[in-house]
Image (cartoon, rainbow, N blue to C red):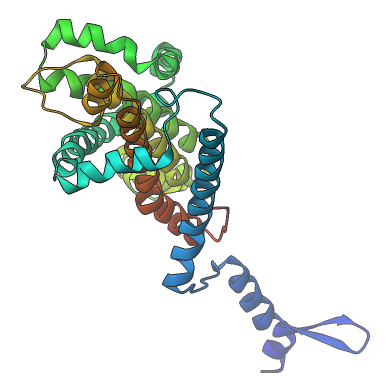
Length: 301
């Protein structure tokens, strides 16, 4: 009994003792992620207020430039005229079919891109020969403007929805792959070695070790992939037009340009921007915050 007490308490200096159990508990507490419950209203306020302030400042500058009459009305309409165009879309009920046409294509194309890019990213990250062969090509594809794929896709598939999805996939898959590869590169090798030592197969290693450990980089790649898929969709809708494809935001923008309707052009641009900001604030920002907090990181998410 006396020996056990001697092991738990060791002198840290003259006349002082250290409780090893308390030291261990303190180290465990340092490893445990801090969970701070922030009220929902405060999270919404902190997430929505800065963009709203920025939009308000932009509208103020816009109104000032319009009041100064530096450009003719058909080049720079008043913010109220553009707001009237958006309100007309809402009042007539046209906005919902237009938004749905674009959104469902972007979401479906993005989900297919993630399903295709995830196994490809694992192979590129873990097989050295494949990485050396196709890694530079994937990076080059990521820098290729999505609009360049539209003529080729139209010739391959005609003016069909397949053309739209092909452009979306070609635009977003390289970003998701590169994000996953970057995330896996930052995984400590000791984790995969521990998995092998415990008898994990390659699939189990990827499923239970690599993907969870690479989640921050993977999510960053998915976020960038969504941005590319949205841009690619707008490029495809601007160029490829047919009754079979319907009217999305891109075609709404193109129709306003054809009629020299500058308020309609700016209204379509604002709606495209609004969708992009909404998806970031409502989907990716909460996911980022949750992942960072789970790892004991606060970040800026």
